[in-house]
Length: 514
Ligand code: FAD
Ligand code: DLZ
Image (cartoon, rainbow, N blue to C red; front, side, top):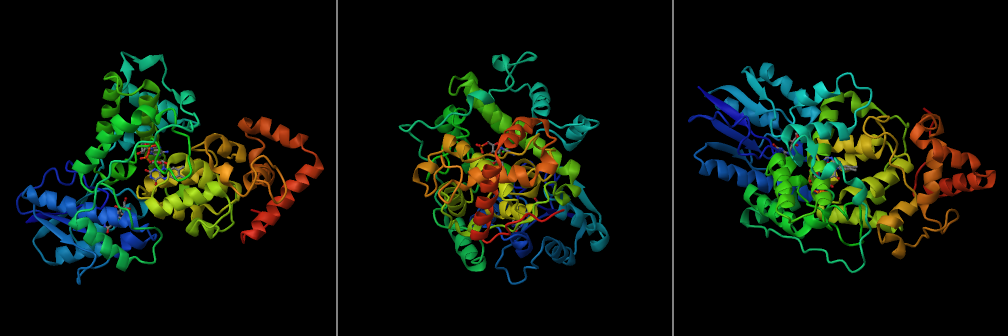
């Protein structure tokens, strides 16, 4: 008897735990299924990327003499779900066992727990060891701690991996160069042209199928340039290391209208789908520092995102799910404004971030956190709706990484597990870090009235609306002191401007009580 080895769409790694002990006679099962593509209506480009990468990966396994049973989205017999596809394969007979690597989303992991009983064969769900720290490592570190701070977990992983270490000390004498990483873009700076992978026959076929089958999903399919193989993803990494990494640090937080990528790596979709290995990527960046290709603030800043944030958010997700997504610490209840789908808003920064997202299934971290995220936070949008939006619009989105970033970091809905205070900002921050305000119909320097930047009054309105929950936060002490000094007229203007604005975009003016 043989083993059926299920490989999911974000498990496209040659070294996958479920493939390691493959033997002649075993079959690798891969399936493009409606259920995974529509449990949230993923961006068309995300589906095209994943289906094409899956087809290329299947071909690669076959070239290594593995037997692959591959179900395409247009196959007549397609069962429509992963469980249905496993069932169909088992019905053919000849398998006494199913092997799979644990999925990256809680809903699927729960469903898989019932598979063994349902199918009547043992289902071996293996650890996903494609991360730098095993989950046990995170849990041991987190145990008994009152506060979980990414920086401390990151330092432990630096020590354990030896990355950017000089003996037992951090390279350059500092763990963190974040304060060097907040520069504005100089107006004359040259932004490097992206390394593109032109779609091959497989990708073009997939794009046509996605256009037909998922026509009602968000997002554009035009201008597809993503890598769909590990080899091409490596080439994207090579390009990033030499062309963008040297400036990644300084301009990590900067934004520029019409420039989606700046000096960011755009590697998250490959890392999360298994086409790139996180430790290898960190080591490549580290080598760039020792070879004199990129400065320490850039290299440390980049490595911190992967060795620090990426590992940390995964630990948070699995440590606190499923309760994590039940939390709504600020009782945010307003629905997601329609313009998140269309980009039709007069706020230039939001319009740019949303249209970039629609076009590329990508926006960089500060656009996600400080523009679309900040607006959703200030406007008190229901976290479930915001989570759904982030999970479906980005090519790199899987719940293990999307949820802590959205629910925790951007919305503070977890009550402060991910962030010690809400990432709330007025228009001044956006003006400092971007050129959007220059072309905006609103005036960032105006605090109130119809011409004022809505971020300005919504910021204070947020602090007023959430006073019961936030006044006790010591990191907000100064802000609440400023609010206390605000005269009644000003406070009234903030409330009125916010009410008027909410009404205009079709939202409830008043916050619902808990
Ligand atoms: P770079 O800026 O080049 O960073 C390098 C790498 O570091 C990324 O490729 C990514 O793997 C990792 N990284 C950076 N920041 C984070 C972070 N906060 N958490 C985890 N990994 C990080 N990232 C996802 O991969 N999937 C998501 O669904 C996702 N949703 C997000 C939602 C919100 C509201 C916010 C604020 C952030 C989200 N992020 C998510 C984190 C981050 O924004 C993206 O990883 C990053 O923008 C991807 O672009 P890049 O590859 O150019 O990253
Ligand atoms: C995201 C996604 C999509 C769009 N489609 C598929 C698919 O058809 N088949 C598949 O195996 N995986 C797909 N995925 C990725 C899964 O949703 C992902 O494995 C789970 O969310 C767990 O991370």
